[in-house]
Image 1: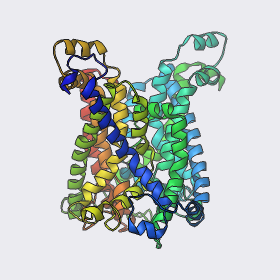
Image 2 (image 1 turned 90 degrees about the vertical axis):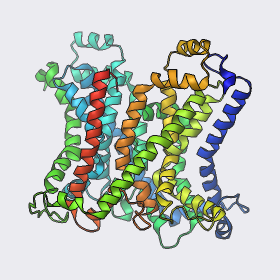
Image 3 (image 1 turned 135 degrees about the vertical axis):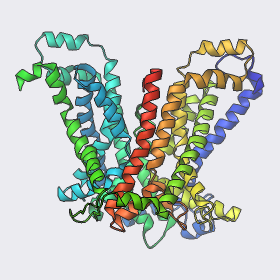
Length: 285
Length: 286
């Protein structure tokens, strides 16, 4: 890459630039190729799959998708996931929204210590509190229930969501809030009428990232929900994949059905996703 | 309700109340229970738990599964500190150096990150398959051979992870003052030299934060091992989290599993504390 020595800060020239594009394209193939192969496998017959899982399908069996939909019980899983995802996104927005307003605008005693606590609580290993939580949830009737799962996800995601919304609110102008206060508005009114509308992009980011994390989450879903009728999509798909009849073409089709909604949502709203996920660190390795 | 709300110190904590309650219910209280149960013979089924002192912690010391899990966790952490970090820094740096298609590449690299771990595991299980996939071409069994399995699971997990790092590093690199690059170029520094003397120092807080998160999250890693290998073959991919899960939910040794969880939390809190000390000393923002 020595050809760049004379170049300006951004932009390579000549061979260096060509090389850069070759490398970037190779990485792009590494990122997307597996998903494309997975899609191809979803369209194969069992015979074709057995002959090789790395190539193009010859017959393009689209009815694999309908077969997977019924056999893997994807409809029920998707409905349960919708409840869990929407519930988590809404509850996290409320909980983190209120707390971040207090941390950004109201001079709360001990707020610095509380934020450090949030950082620590947000990075504790879930395995540390999994068993007592499991026991508490069974005692409280929250085991094997979608609302129990929503509460757990809200508890897990709201610390980082709060820190993210707080930094978003710190950048909002204060003049409108002060004017409303002078007009006699209380804190709840200021929060609902002025801060929430102005912070809507921040809330959208929190809703998207916590919704995506809830949709993909596995450890708590597999631990806390037992009955088929209440399983979210991640464990519905997992039990289908672990099933006795290992039909890989249908497993691929079911898996593709699972990731399709999030792929579409991501492609439509990618800036919000990327901003949120890259600043909040909601996801894990 | 109207009167105290006028007082901002009171209303402040009222606004934080929902977060405090949810966090206490899901994280804080179960954590405190965990610490208590780690000193008992709790099975996890009933509330009966007899105090046994430090027995669980003493047993950890000569539990080969715990030792194996710890070693695999350290290897796992090392892998994630090196491979995805290098790929993320490299990808992001090359992206800052091109003008066209930057956003397209960024989007493509990010897609694996939004694929659910259960599906990601299926994708790679069929690609690596010893009968139909790469395993067949290379005559290896990536997930079935004890010498390869841990690497293979790490590889699969990394596929979903490195693109996220590209995006975060790219955002940080775009915040580096461009005149520094021009000055370096005038001084005759090539692309490689500019990376080490301008880019890397410029993104140091992000780099340190992600290093911290990598260490923390490496100790949480669970999904891919549980789904792909269940810790096998012959325990070669067992992590602390999968050993703990088995002890708690299959072997009914929840008190013992709690002790393991407490040790994991201690390890990560040492790392977080070290980070917080450095952060305060250097006055970083995150």
